[in-house]
Image (cartoon, rainbow, N blue to C red; front, top):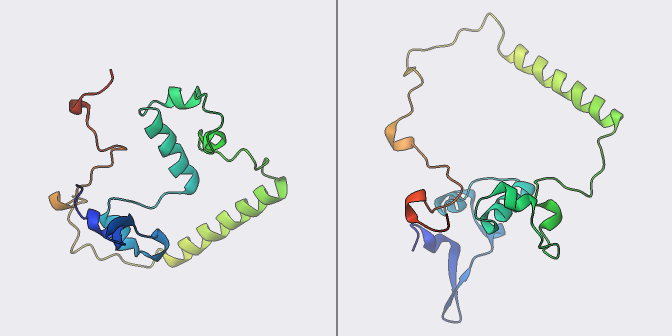
Length: 142
């Protein structure tokens, strides 16, 4: 059983059932090993899981009846191309954000580097970002 697995379960009629993630705190989801991911990315990751982490197999998938099949490449096929007006709006918004950041960090501001540790990451802060829990040493199909 996974560490902190109990955060995702509740008892109903004497049986363990999964909790509703809408009622869970972000910390509880993190303790279960989840991180924030977009819905399209989650679908792509599920397709990779289904195809043994092979992007080529996801591309060649023949399970056309699967609800995730249209989204397997990480794109929403139901949305059309971005209009020129929308693209221009995004460009202007980006320029505005850049100007706001530049204003927040003007040349006159001093940064206190007294507590700077040289960019070292503490050993206890390291996280494994592998897509699956299985390692190559665990065996499986080759």
